[in-house]
Image (tube, rainbow, N blue to C red):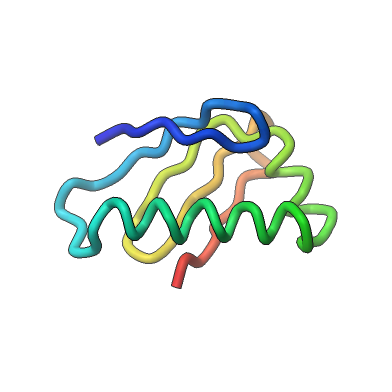
Length: 79
């Protein structure tokens, strides 16, 4: 399943596995708060990934952040 979220004035697609046990709205709230927190207080490598973010994939309790450069992509724990 695909949902678009707004982050830093960009529409970012978020891909979910429909078999997830967590409610989608709760996961989205955790994701957006984690992204905002990391954007404001994160280290340089994380900010570089967030500035070039193209999509997010939710796998269990982790968000895989895909950026324009595959070397900048990383995983972010939601819980």
